[in-house]
Length: 101
Length: 496
Image (cartoon, rainbow over all chains, first blue to last red; front, top):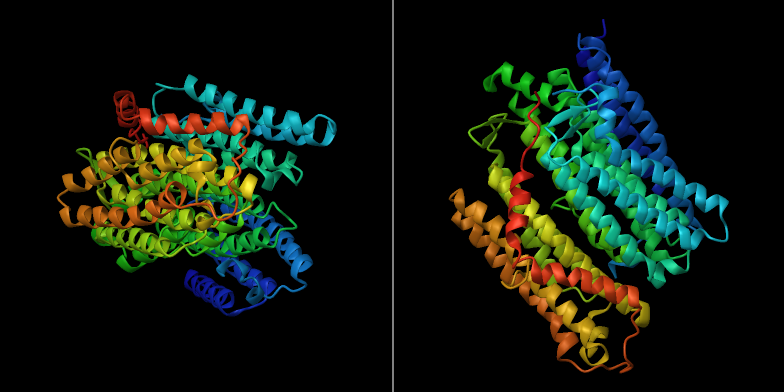
């Protein structure tokens, strides 16, 4: 029997993995994958809460919007990463340090 | 009063005007190739003024909730709509004669500016978590593109990359927090959430979860308002973005972020009564905010001391100002909210003014370094004196309007009996005086090493500079209407 707790544990694990990925990866595309994990962990939460309670479909509606926003966000982020590749011929975040100097 | 979709529409005209404006600007950009560069700014200004007109028409309307509790319309919403539209108008005018933006195609720029304005207006008024998240993302996504607008410029690209990575993580974390709120209360509506918390009784709430939710939510709001420890993006993004965009980011999304922060905490997370709010959850929430506020202003001011790039310096100074504004949130009273509104209003003119001077000087000299500002008084006394007034206003020296902002914010803290907190704020303002004075010293006293040629300023920029100077000087004299307006704007929709 899968209960609400299982889903919450899964989403907490995904969220932690996402944050871990964002903090440790040097490749911009890998960082974006970490961000996707964070957004989807919230989606799992929303849908699980909606499914296991009697509060209607608000949570599922929210999750659909989040999926759309996530797609838009990745589109913008990839466009920016692509521009970076055109300018620097790399997507390593270590090279994005001109402004610090 | 909770209105359904059809009845909400007539209160939604400002946002509808902005939406139509975005589409018209995009269409004009595609269809009218010959005229578009001249027509697009005019269309944008017209849209913004039309939205402002519709907003003014709604003045005095009773507080209500639109679209089944998605948005609120109240005095607070009216204030922020007018504030954000005014900021957008000033930034459109400031971006017209900027050499940074002149080299690239500008049509989409104005469409993006309208889109981000629409997002901010919705953000400041949203009372539903889904609406809040969507409008926050609308603001964020469009501002990422605006920061990276100079596609061939390495700094602009790097700034937008840092902005989007930091922003996506912050808003993602906030979303996780919002999903936990939904789980605890079973609703996305701020008022239902508050009632659900209150009916459980303050003891029935899991303290740890509430703390986690508030920390995660604060990541999103703190990112928008550039509050420590969510400020890391701020100096790099401000330094790399085109200057008019930096000016816009330093004022408008910050204000919208504070608006939604206030709504979230005062409508969703606290109970009203007797003109005061007390926070839900049994956590000493004001103490946490005091900590954040002190950290924010101290770090902003200390880091600004060593900056040689004026844009970076102004970025750290805007972090410090976020700290001062946060002082008004700490007191959890109507007085505190009023102080925040006053502070934001005067901050608009002084900060946009300072960035306009940066734009003007970059137009002729292509530099942001403070030492290149040496001898500016001899080259253009008008610009040097204008910058001096903006800087003195940012410090908070009495005859200028920046002083009124500090007066209200510190006053609200002292009213609450937090004398040491006000003292820390005053001490910070004194530290801040040092780095603002450095700019003044360079411009007024030092001699120019590079060139002594008079500064070329377009007529539009001169007029805009005067328009930004006047509020800094005259607001203090005509203060009564501002005081009355902000006092009337504290009215937040209560949920019934």
